[in-house]
Length: 315
Image (cartoon, rainbow, N blue to C red):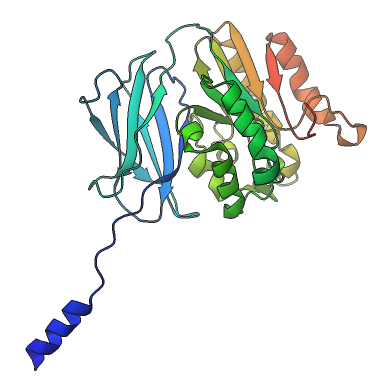
């Protein structure tokens, strides 16, 4: 009887479930995108993450790079940074579990050239409202109009409620992994990515930045620069109204010294800066005078070429 009972339990056991495939696969720039690349994604399962990558011209030369689990918000998020890549080279890659049970699709990206070369990038501001019905058609049109774009620059307020996983679902659905997983996303946070003084937990898990910003934990993942084919892209955090001035410090001042050094030591012929709140607003009730007083002279002193902002929903 005992043997029969044991057999009955074994027969009723549920079959093992395969690990889930990666979703929200996203490329984030490093300081030098000609030789390295960061990839983030998430899955429903907790597994040992790995990236497989090979030159597109030699797909059999697969290299495996171990990743890390980075948190728990909205599924299990992972990150891998691969170094030692060749400049100006097309690569194919996929991410998933080290045991091979849950790999995503093979996708492709190109490393930046190691010097100035012409390229195209897209600029998006305040996608946040009615993403599926309103923003998605514009995003689709932009991607179709510039299929060779190498970067997407986002000037903040990617979603309306930074802590809403459902809105991030809409955002990623609007762009699709064919876009987020094939060109670097250069992202600046807006006020809607904040709740009070805290940025949403989603931010750093999805957009870790290049890791070369000021030495300030409050600005981690939100202030950095990346050099792409003769252009230094500088990402700043303009959410000074969210900062707890009265008992700690001034976010704008923390960035000011760093910004001067980044612009002064720029080896590139071009500079593009992006952040959320505009230096010149299109409405007198939304004026950001302190931001203008802090940054305008610096941009002019160091001959900044292009400053891309958002917030006012007028571009």
